[in-house]
Every structure is written in structure tokens, then in C-alpha cells.
Length: 296
Image (cartoon, rainbow, N blue to C red; front, side, top):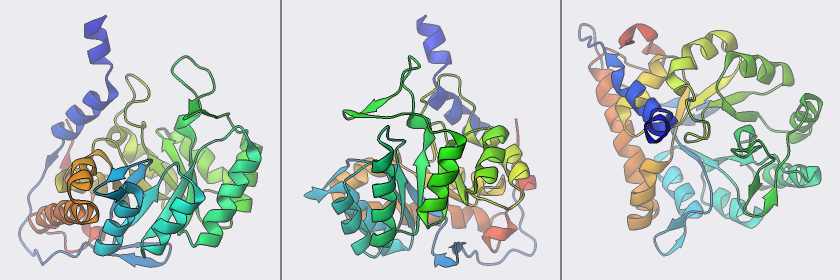
């Protein structure tokens, strides 16, 4: 059983798959790289965003607010997970452009209240992490004492209609859910297995090319799970992602240096991405293409 448990560790499977992808060098005609990125008409310095984290402790303060500060300092999108409305307001007040990800609360009115607050507070977009609906035994999940429950497709369509902002589904790991996200009116998805929430789950980059083909440019596609450096980012973007989310790579810098640690980590990852772009003749993010990545 121990061996089977190790074999089914989706985080390990994801890391091994990321490491198996190789990058093709190209130099003729290369130019200085530009990592700037546009989302919903707004310009950012990097396609590297923070993951939809929750309840973080930073250096001498609220780690969520410090994470947002770090994003504002380096021109990155900031996804935000579970938290109270006052915290979201403080994050947005740092100048960061925040995408608020809301849980599938069993109390439907709570979903609507969170959406309304995010809109009034000035969030860039909103979304829902559907991968947090159930626990490992197939029961409705309870997160920090708060019960979750699945939403029907009609309920999801209505939530998106009422959101009044671009809407993301987080936890998409299939062409089937990509089709449903499009049919329900989503503007973006996060390709993710929620840090290995399902044993033996597909690595996000393994299914990404099929998801990109299914979306046909109609969704903003982010990828998370195991992204730790600019070379992982390069591979994800080359395979069709528009952006990536970084989570655990930020934890230690946040705890040790607060907002500055987040900023410097995002800048380091972006610089590594730029280095990979320079050595593959990619002047802009639009130049990245699947032929640059060799699959196992």
C-alpha cells in the first residue's frame, strides 16, 4: 500500500512530467525578450501570477495583503482564495489587480454576497474553485467549518450572469469541463488538480494542449500545480497557456521577507522566463509555440 500511495501522488507525477519536458534552443534572429502580458484589456509586466492562496501569514502582518503588495510592486496578477471581505478590500487597496476565487458554498446567498463585494471592491475578475466541492470520501467538503455543496449547471450559469465580472473556473483538468466552461459563459479557466487533491490525477501540462485546442482562443487559460521557476513557466506558455499561477514557491519568501519576498520571487521567475525566451528566439510571449517543447 505504501508503494501504491507513492505512485499515486499527483504532485510527484506532475513534477516528474514537468521535468521530462525539454526545451529546443533557437538563436538565429533572436531579439531581446518582452514578458509583458495582457488580460481583459489590462497590461501586466509578467504572465506569472500568484495562485489562489488563503489564510497566509506574512512577515509581521497579513500574508494575503503582503502577497498583493508584492504583485503590485512587480506588475503581476494576484489570484485570491478564501478570506473575509475586509481582507479582499485591503488587497485591492494595495494597487494589485486581484482575481477573487470563491468557494462553492452550500449557502448560495453567501456566494452572491461574495461576488457583489468583489465587484464593488474593484476586483479584476472573479471565479470559483470547483475542485473543492467534495472531500476524499465523496462527501460534500467542509472547509474551516464552512460546508460546501455542488452547483448544478443552471446554478453556475446564473452565478456567472450575476457576477458582473469576467469569471474563471478553477480546477479544470479535461476537455469535457472546458466545453462546459465555455457553454456556461466563463471567460477563463485555471488548469489544476488543486495540489494533488485526486491521486493519479493528470499533470496539468499533459492535458493542456488538448484543452487549448478545445478552447480555440475563447478562454484565458492559466495553469498551476508545481510551477516553481521560469522554465516551468516557459513550458506551460509554449504548450498554450496564457499565464501561470505560482503558490508554494512563494511561501518561504513571504514568511521571511513579506511583500518584498513575493516581489523578488516573481521577478526571479519572470527573469528566468525571459532568459529561456532569449535562447529560443522568442521576442514576445506570442512567439512561444508547442514546437519549442519536446514531449517524452
